[in-house]
Image (cartoon, rainbow over all chains, first blue to last red; front, side, top):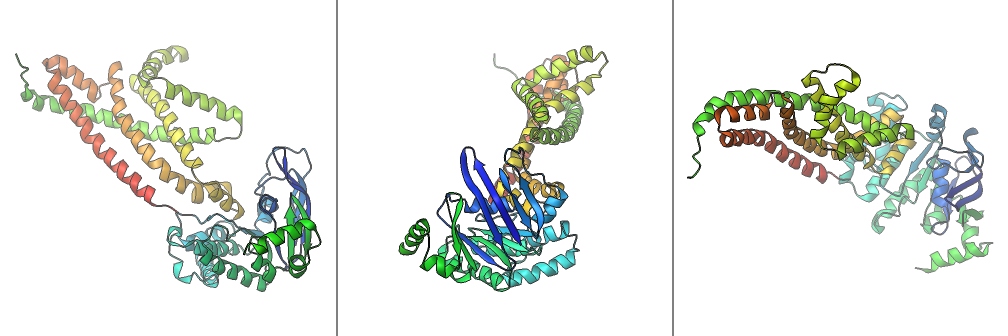
Length: 253
Length: 222
């Protein structure tokens, strides 16, 4: 489904991603964990083309999306083909990115109408169905400022799903939320995974990783240190750094 | 001996002043429209990645912001025809001068408004697959205009007052008529007071409306 090969990203002289390789299979939920600054978010941002990697390749459903050789200059070019492949991926961010001047419904129908060429009616019907799925059927005419953080994130998920992506990327989507709102967002994500959506999830919610992930990837210092089934990674990590991280996050409770 | 006000001349002066006001308003309106269109181009050029486009435009902006409008006006009125080797009617040269002046200010306001749109809004639009024109039209500009409109309105009020500069080169606007009447009647105090009131009666409601709009737009947050 997604194939990441030799991804390198530098910010100035600091190498944030050091030749990352990762395959995500159809229907798989991959949860990426690791300390702050380990490159998890940068990895997602490179995969979807928001950051320009310094080198490496990304393939989506076998279609080449990003191919950079080291030393190549300039930002990614947003060609038609680039946008077509980019659209196969949906993404939800840590920050709230609902468009504040549009209602929830308009937020969700904008791209289907403008990008997929759906009629207003059809797009609205699709949006209503998705908003019902994330539990926001009574908020469709509300503006984002009237929503709680959890509702905004659920609406953002519906907005991304409206383009019928093949894979969803979640970048610490619960990190900006009040603790009591985290659950409602995670349960939507768990439902998505159960429906067979291919997912890459960066999160600090270890309970979610443990329960929902098909595979857990531990990153540190810009590389993948260890990956495996959640039960293996959490209970018997092979690498010292993985063990240190997991001990730290699990014992702070 | 205390000054004796002679307000009785006002009824006679008023029609002349109002004729001047009509020209003042026409100049203001034309320059607002042309200046805003120029401002859009200026902002687009300022935001261009190509430094061959953005640098010269930055220089233009700094030049027109950093020199007095009166100097610009006089220079374009007297020097531009010589340099271009053509006759420019007085009206055309003041329109050009004022448009170039406010275009620089509008341009900066528009650029600032566009850059005030949070980066993650732009990124969200990008990954939804919106094309560049759609991204600007549906996501960036509606949010930018919240910032741009109050600034553009207050620039426009300033422009309305600054058009009085054109009286120095013989364009018969409100200020020009006031000065002519002053010399004709030997009553500059009365005439100029009335002229000031006319400017104020128009500018003040606009300023108040701008401030109210600004407060309303600021209260809409996400």
